[in-house]
Image (cartoon, rainbow, N blue to C red; front, top):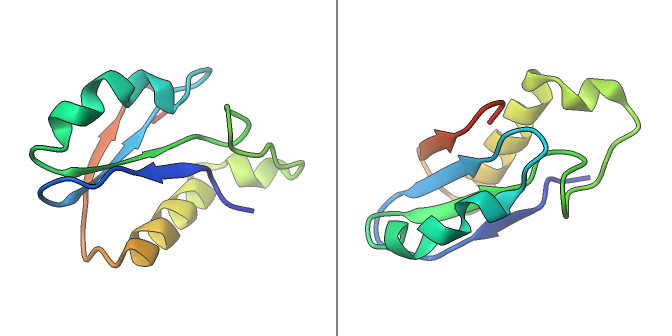
Length: 90
């Protein structure tokens, strides 16, 4: 089970964009085109939000598990490092 994510190709390093509680990747979409001039935005949706599944196991919602998911995504993209943009719980 993986978090839903979208990669928007742009110029520069990847930027992971994490929304807050009771929100979705939609909060970032007005900014994506401008950000693509300086980075490659990667928008994710947290567990149980919009297109991401809602795991039954409560431990999946802990920060440690989110970090594991984000790290797996970074490796999947082949990024040595990336920028982070978050809001609220993100």
